[in-house]
Image 1 (spheres, rainbow, N blue to C red):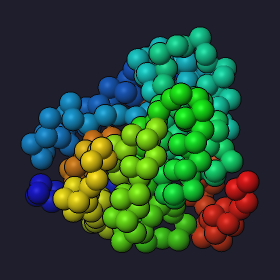
Image 2 (spheres, rainbow, N blue to C red):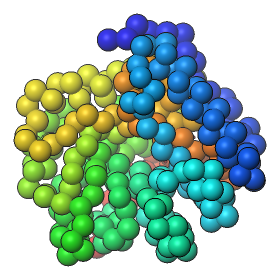
Image 3 (cartoon, rainbow, N blue to C red):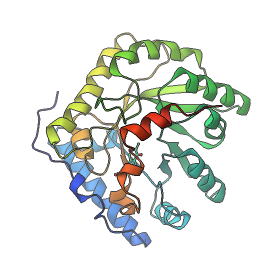
Image 4 (tube, protein in one colour):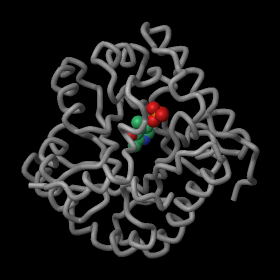
Length: 275
Ligand SMILES: *Cc1c(COP(=O)(O)O)cnc(C)c1O
């Protein structure tokens, strides 16, 4: 296990990332993020090639996504299915651009995801697994999936409780169009680096335990954890995918509470009607 370091979060910078408006802005931001990835890897003796940077383009207009593509991005993360779908439709000319859906999915939108996404990182119920698998079979496609785990014990976060993950994983081989790659989490949204780190440690520890009993065909190599404010800590704790939006694209116009709703809103969202 890597030794703890003094790496801090950068959540205080939210809202201060300047908007990227030229290809050069994107190139510079991507290089800066990559340099931070490399440095974090270096601190704990990891090979930077074992960490994939997933640029997150949610809320950003098509023109920004095209600049990111011109700067070299070939997969983009979006957390809302309909927004992702609209962008995918508008950018069909970029035939090698792939899409990762990283936000909670309702079963009635599984159909869309099955059509266009390459990766889905927020699997947290058998109903969604079943709906996705059924639609993927119809499309003749398969999908890389990550099981989302709630490591911060906040009601506002989606994801399975850690104790429910072992049973959940055992059920996944039934869905042959889903290629399970690993686990995903959102850490506590906090300036307390040590509390943030504990979320990442929990995800890695859980993954290590699951590996001993994972069914055949269930891959658990990937740990998707870390975003603009905390990806260095996530890498120190074993992240293989970091999901970075604002540090590449610039601050979002809407506050984070829009994406990480209050507990009341999250509860309303969870109980909304799926069909
Ligand atoms: C928006 C989002 C991110 C990226 O957050 P930034 O602060 O823009 O880096 C990462 N993961 C998920 C699930 C998100 O919704």
